[in-house]
Amino acid sequence: MRYYKDPRRHPKRQYIGVALQKEHSLPYPVNIARPRRLNRVAVTTTPEPTVVVAEGTSDPEVIVAATQAESQAIPADKNARVLTMGRGYGFREANWQIGRAAERANVQVKQFVPGDRWTAWKRSQARIQANEEKKRLRNSAKKGKTDKAKKQRARKTA
Image (tube, rainbow, N blue to C red; front, side, top):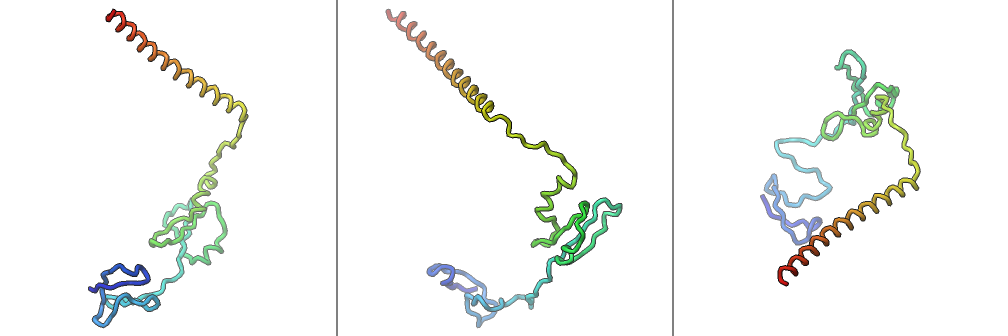
């Protein structure tokens, strides 16, 4: 374990690092391969595989493995789902395919109709005026109570 300063990160801050051999100096240069513990070697990864799952089949284990390029050549079947291996080594559907799930299920949504904006504005104004009237009535009722209390106090003192 060694203390070192890294001017690329922060010129004054001190860091703690592990040098795997006595002759190593920290920080390691950016462009060199990192030394590995336990004789591990850096290995390049293969292209991300893609899995095609056919829906509607009686056997749920029907899975065809393909590469990313082969998945492009797969005919676009509405019932087929294409699962791609992600960074966490788990297969998942692409976001755009998830967004199309309602289309695949033939879900019908009512068409948005903006309606009459003038009528909506009038209703909104009516609601605002009704709320203001309620506030006025509440405040006048509170004011009336305080006026009655003042009159009673004045009678008692007189």
